[in-house]
Amino acid sequence: MTRRPIIAGNWKMNLTVTEGLALARGVRDRCARFRGVDVVVGPAAMALHPIIERLADSPIGVAAQNCHWADKGAFTGELSPVQLAEVGCTHVIIGHSERRTLFGETDENVGKKARSLHDHGLIPIVCIGETLAEREAGTTLAVVTRQLDAAIALLDGDELSRTVLAYEPVWAIGTGKTATPEQAQDVHAAIRARLAEKAGAEATEAVRIQYGGSVKPTNIRALMAQPDIDGALVGGASLDSDSFARIVSFEEDVDR
Ligand code: 13P
Image 1 (cartoon, rainbow, N blue to C red):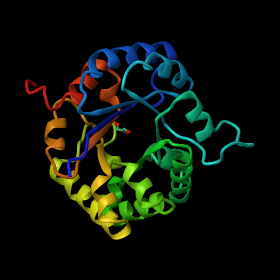
Image 2: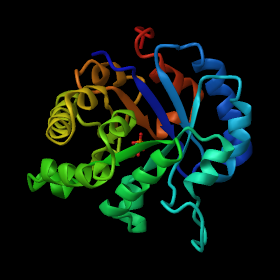
Image 3: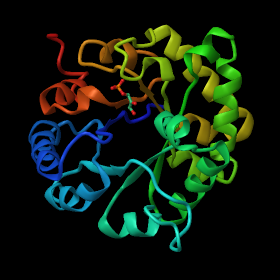
């Protein structure tokens, strides 16, 4: 089965609304023509609505960077899947390592968020990945498997096949140190093997697994050439529409 690539930009807490709108316009102008790839941008929460309006006439998806699992309630400062669906978000990034390490995100909560997102027609982009200490201790696969199992525990096979996974080794995020394509492929293959134990062959084959961690125009092609790498979750290089477009156009842009 050929899986349709999905390239997403995680803008993190980087841009004002004005800057985000300008970047969204640049992404639309440069990326909307690449019809063979799902393109998603992930602005800060207050920029979601205006950016969704700006991108309304394009195939580009818009992701929130986090959510709560409840529909509504006394959760000061949180955003619910209901609220995100109403403004037109298509995806929500959950379990990002920055949320896990800086804001106490747990494996169990990631599972509840994935469940709730599917209840409201939103696609989770579930981030999993080991720290440098975990890699050096030889526990990469144990960590990633534990995170994966919890994230998908409440999903059926159909929901799982629509879920996007993002393998982001924490030591590669924002460091300029990309995992080698082979290192990434090893973990992606292990993730897919674990999916095969947990879900049917159909879902296992369908799930798209992005790689994230210092993805750039210069390394995207080698990463995408790996059989189990189906896209990228891009941080720093997604903040410039030109470099993001060069990543999105990895199949065409041979001159880099
Ligand atoms: P960088 O691409 O800046 O390393 O960030 C990766 C990331 O965390 C995407 O979610």
